[in-house]
Image 1 (cartoon, rainbow, N blue to C red):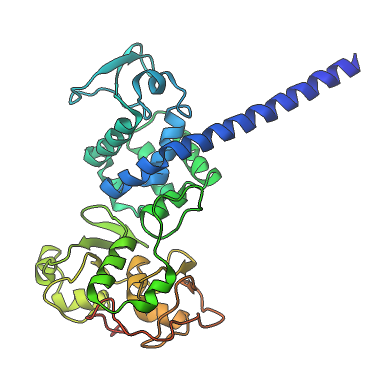
Image 2: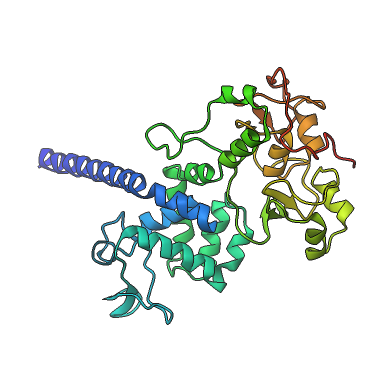
Length: 349
């Protein structure tokens, strides 16, 4: 009898392990199938790709729920009064509720982004940094996206278990995916040694330029807005009720009339330390670009990494954002160009 029970127990254990492995493989396949659209939607609307993928995995049962299979509805979005497309009835919180029906899963992903971007109850989410997946997950639950009390922890666990944050970082231009999941190749790092004309510099910056939400949002707990090329600094100062001289000061810039490219413009003084511990220098980035991307003061970034005016860390080097680095990073030997002519090398405060 003991042998029989032991045999049954072993079969049960092996079955559980097998089911777990199958589920894990299904999730990976789902990610592979929908990562591209999640990244594209983040670039279009600002909804973090990690959040989108985690919601899709959970809401659609890894693409195997009734709504996903019959209606291509991967996010459980109900009809609401403004929906004019096809519908399907499905019992969820109540009997035979009306849900949206799509012609493809991609259409479902696009509508999901629009649903969050245009929904008043989700407006506060877009003031969060796109990398703050914990804040987004909790914010979705608090805004009433789902009734499950464990909804936020479920999303957070999926993001961390399957490293979904890499897709958010990729959409922001801060990380390359491995070769099996790469979406867009990055330029050769040797290219930086041969950049001599403005067109090449602008093209390279455009490749690496992340897409941020519209309006004000926060990076490293610092309020910021995306300024478009050609916009007037004076008009931005008036719009956000900031003295013009202070606007230049907190952004480590010298005075100018208009912005020469799309860029982050901080409305508050940046921090002396970054939210992240380290930052890997990307192709074509100046120290000012990094300081702006991480919401850290330029002079603090330089001091933490033993850098002086005119020094340019080489692509691939790791910079410290919180503690004094143990050594100076490898430098580009000859910097014969400036990525932003009006940048000053050190803050004046």
